[in-house]
Length: 356
Ligand SMILES: NC(=O)c1ccc[n+]([C@@H]2O[C@H](COP(=O)([O-])OP(=O)(O)OC[C@H]3O[C@@H](n4cnc5c(N)ncnc54)[C@H](OP(=O)(O)O)[C@@H]3O)[C@@H](O)[C@H]2O)c1
Figure (cartoon, rainbow, N blue to C red):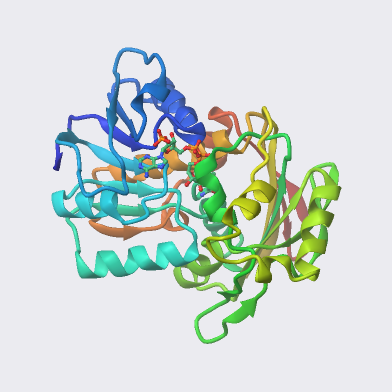
């Protein structure tokens, strides 16, 4: 059974995976006073660990929960049966999740409603461990309150990702709802194609289902939040769009063709650069921010998770559900730069333009 110890370690479920290793490194560098417990099904895969880091076996799909007293839990592996989340709710342990696609996030809201806990439940599964909604919330505050948010992601085909991340993407045959309450629209993945300048590149991007398109209209009262994704290699984007037009993702559903879909969607490389753009139209102006992380998308996701963990462990954090876009992070851009993430924000107000 998990128990709460305010001086205990932070447990990273899935902590020796691709994102987990990045988060471990960030936590050791910036919060070395927090011991860590990394868990997974095959602890031997963690390899050698440094002092202050221990490894335990914990299969999130089993009902057996390890006996360990922890300060907080971060899930960086799919919590398919909400085991980690329920254990945290039962023991009032701060909990951060970065893995849930929209339907899973909605399920998490139902779980918390049915089993309210005494600690913060930080639902940080928006793009890049909640970094995108956090940035949208921050930038919205600088332009008089966000009205519309538009996100364009350039996914580097050379970048690293682990097997556990495919489930998030393996939803291209399923329509999703986005938009403000009462004005939802049903969206088919890989439609609504645009070409967007992301840094120096003009990237062809198309809609995908990500949680911030659901949470941002609710939490910030937006008219709409739109997220599109394209690949650094334009032929990879063209290939996916062609498969969508042929109806592949609608036909190739279900468990039988899961392997084929996964082989198509999971072709990790050895490392790339994460780049994305967040456009916020606000009541008093607009801002376009380009985010660049040379260490890649797993690192950027770990940065998002780290910021959310800090929020969840803040003594002022309230019990119950929290979202990164509602966190007050006055020095967010400086914090990001300290963590190796470059943000270039260009503001346009009513009559003047300025760069920050
Ligand atoms: N929100 C975002 O923007 C964002 C971005 C990137 C990634 N993610 C999410 O982060 C997660 C990790 O991605 P990744 O690329 O790091 O994947 P990964 O390298 O496969 O890491 C997952 C880790 O979790 C462990 N694991 C898998 N299934 C488990 C289970 N049933 N119980 C316990 N441990 C389990 C694996 O080790 P064992 O095989 O030994 O168990 C592995 O170490 C994914 O869910 C992904 O969708 C989110």
